Length: 213
Length: 192
Image (cartoon, rainbow over all chains, first blue to last red):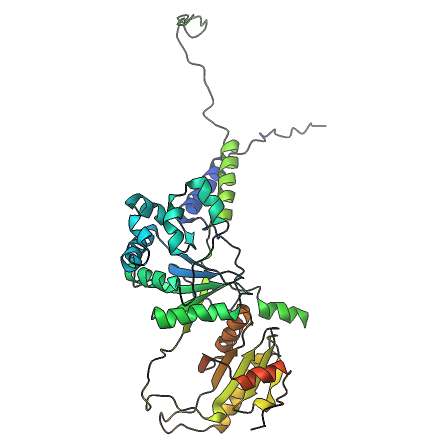
């Protein structure tokens, strides 16, 4: 009987192709990625079927307890906004005039901020670690009619970049009064009549409740 | 200590110096491992999905000329009220006494009523002499204090789904507030 010799094949696989693909993907993700800005509070966005994407915007975040935070898309704009702000309200808050160019630069790195103006110079002086702890309990931007700083910020931001859209990012259980207050500030004080409500697709009320039926 | 090896490339008989033949293949497995690790990291941290947004236009509260004001007939109007317990209340026209309760639940909820009113308006309300077009349905949204933001987004979404031509967010009247508080009954106010 003839013996059958099974040809012995090497078990090692050529990894070059796989390596190529993985690095291609890696490059893609590195280039397209933008790190999530660390939100000072968790915001559970309500869902809607709207598919319009919003890329760069002045985002007013409203937390569950009605605190307002602001986020701008790019650093340059943040710095310009701060400068405009100092010009606008410098009379009322003389401390703001003492902000150095260094601190303005520092302000550019803050992605989400929610500090009353009177506190701003102090906050900008904080170093990295101290700022981190401060950021975990941001007090929010005052929106009441006496200290309507949100309107000033919006005004300054619009001045820095008039084309930027404005968006409201509210939590599902934010009280409607707080949202209406912000809308009122936008329409009355900042003269903005067209803005966006940030929503997420799917997993929302309609599908949830359909399951219940 | 540091000596230079001058012995030549091994003891070849013919005295030629020959480099040892090495395989040119490199094991790429660790490199692939590393690449995938980084891919995973970037995939998880990236915000590839940009947030979607719903556009909202609010009117200017300045003085509008009397002739520019849109003409509204009672017949066109559906009032929607949102309360603190995530309920939806609605009534047509001015009949607060007809206040009914519903929910946001899919097709059976407020959407059904919106579509019903829409159909009725196009059948019954006729043509506006001003614009020479069919009178559109108008939905007035009233958010009672303490209601959640989610409800506001939901009702605006319903407006989008049912394609309500005209809708506005309005302040509620005391009658409406009381009617909702009383569970849909209008007690103190005479039925209009």
